[in-house]
Amino acid sequence: MNAFFRRIGRYVLDAIQGLGAIFLFLLALLRHSGTSLTRARLTIRQVYFAGVLSIIIVAVSGLFVGMVLGLQGYTTLAKFKSADALGAVVALSLLRELGPVLAALLFASSAGSAMTSEIGLMKTTEQLEAMSVMAINPMARVVAPRFWAGVISMPLLAGICNVMGIFGAYLIGVEFLGLDSGIFWSQMQSNVSFSYDVVNGVIKSIVFGAAVTLIAVYQGFHAKPTAEGVLRATTKTVVTSALTILALDFILTAFMFTE
Image (cartoon, rainbow, N blue to C red; front, side, top):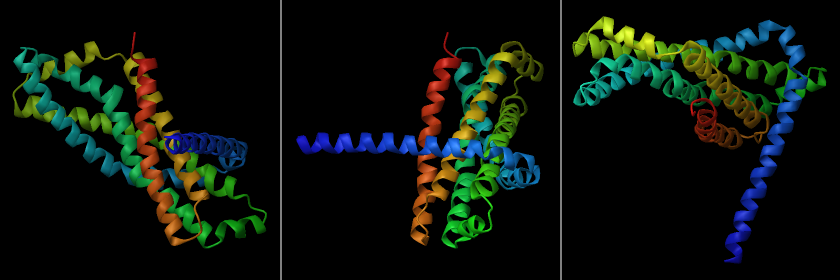
């Protein structure tokens, strides 16, 4: 029994130590962000790699999720003779929850893991040390542009996911199942609030983007300079990011969407 509690205590202490380390890393990142932001070309280049190259997978996933929501939503609502509310139900589900969460999970598995492996490989091949020798700060040159690229890209990807999801629900509900097009859009327009639903969804996606990208660059920067170390860091990025997104989603939802 004592061994069990010692193990639990060690896990708790390791978790607190890890949170402290990543918080100090965030402070260092923010301290060197000014230099990287003045050289916007670095951040724009990372927005392309992290955001633009993730558009296809996010758009296609959003389309299929919207089609599933349209099919399941119509079938369920029709039992209660409320199929007219399909547009509003799908829009609220996507804007408040599914759009930001799905886009963040896909972003973590594609762009986040790529950031970790890229920075880890630069560490393995001693490129980061070479920068330091040349008086170039790796935090300003490598880490900060990727972090801000993630923060910028995530709301845009979540917006694309939402639009494609609503379009997928429209295809199934209106074009396939025969729901009236005017009712679909009017229900959505009358039940969705821009200042409440859309803005809170954007805030969620910004928080998710900051969390995922911070985890990715932290794991890459602290990866062991071996092939196995980079692989472990990449796996940690995906797993930790997924759990963090779900935990943050619960916390943010509790503050934003409960009255």
